[in-house]
Length: 177
Image (cartoon, rainbow, N blue to C red; front, side, top):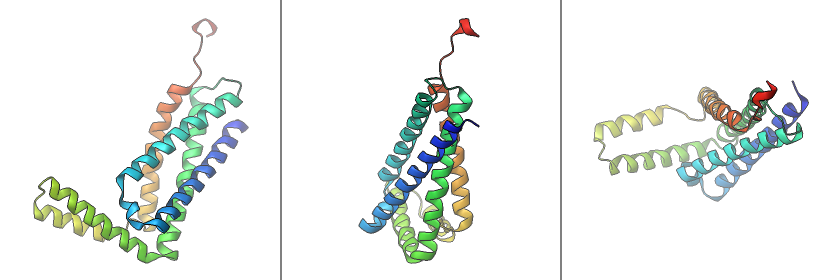
């Protein structure tokens, strides 16, 4: 594997993981309600996607302006997997060892926001009740759910990485093929 791909993937994966930890700590310290704020979640997803495009761009530049689809995808993939793993390991430690009570607070906040949202759309009470039971039975910070969430995030990131690689790969000259 090309060293530039590997080093940029690792470097930016670690940076992304550290940014995620800092954001988590800030939300935890400032206001635990921020964990249920969908705008923050969406904003963070866009930030990581933009950073992924930046990773490919930097890698392409360091490779002399030429990067093929596989190389572009590989740098994006390494970056995202490392960032996801670092972030989720930290979340697991924070909410299971450092402050397990915080995950109960986040659950209550999530339930309240979910009920509020469902009421806006006139969801029947029995459906809301089932949803609440499901949320309470499902520990989002258990090792199983952290692994499932990580897997989902990696799949989602891979799809975005495929799109990013297709967009960012070097254009080939048909006369040189």
